[in-house]
Image (cartoon, rainbow, N blue to C red):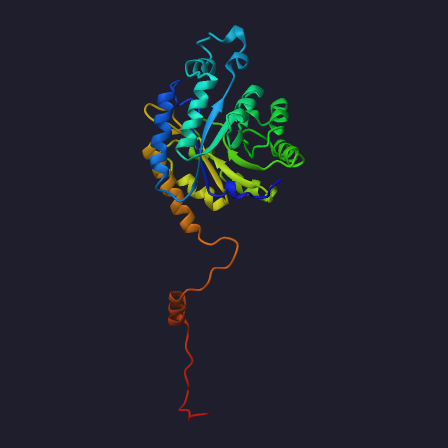
Length: 293
């Protein structure tokens, strides 16, 4: 496994999920508007889609249920494989790193066939071992979110992929949509860095989209990669529009500037020397001294 790959360094992942609203054209509009925002920032950017084969993901007896939240959402925004491929092509055309989350084994094959660059494991799939076995057959670098998982469960997944020499990053995440400030648990980033010092650690966010301070704190805790749900138009309580994404990235940029040099002592500046010399106590003679005395 490649240790702390540059792929994950200052990587910002924009997650569209179902915010394409079941329309390829709307999805393309989201991609283009987010690209216009990202062009002003010095980071790496990935754009992420989600794949599900709803023919097998939803049991036939439940496929028309309107009273089950996620069945209704997934069915109302369903895209076929060719439509998903069109969105992936739009991600490529915009110059984003292409990233995708599979929720079933068929979707892993689609991701491979469509030529994605990174595969993301959702928190809800972190202990889905049949799916993880299929993902392990892929050659793609991996990112895994960890909401709701114990440290022991995360350890097992990390070791599973390490033993298969997979490139992996792990992201702190909280599975509340949206996540209130008091439940962000950003200190978990430092815990993950301490427990897994040889892999990149990140932060996948579900906080209210006007929240911009949390990303600074995540940076201070040592997060290298970041993820946020994004969209255009009417959105849920944890997805950010272009203006909110710009504010988030502006805050992140300020956070990195405040962090400064990491891992080594910074050089002393001339201004520091001048200031400190003006504050040091001086040496005074108690009586007159002759030259050389």
